[in-house]
Length: 198
Ligand SMILES: [Zn+2]
Image (cartoon, rainbow, N blue to C red; front, side):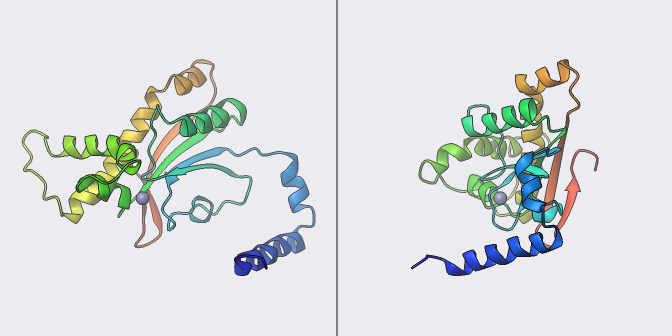
């Protein structure tokens, strides 16, 4: 017996729907992928890249992990960036975080088990730095405003990490059009906000 039949049924309906709209849909997609965007987002099930920005298969290259981190030591993320920039020649890299991120919240609390604790390490640094800014009162560890503020700061930080990568600098040096974006998604209203131009 096939497992998870409801998912296979949904898949068949989805493929049929697309084919009825455009009989050559899948044939064309097989030929080439030319996405203009690379999305680096949180693995959170409530933040699905294609749905949020209304893009079809083939239109956005996607990398997701817990808390949308860009870590130069993460071979997975670096390989995605390398392929997206050097081969697919995406024009935009979007780091998209979200308010209410469980990964950010975990980094505000007590240590957790590995490998998650290792993964959260850059976030812990961010949390520590946010509590030691001169002239600001120490944030309440349970404050929602503090948590949400850290979700934003995390996105900004990941864009800074991107800016510093030799891979990105090399693309710019050879004149390849490439913009970096830091966005945050609000689970409450389904809307995105651009943190870099806000
Ligand atoms: Zn998250």
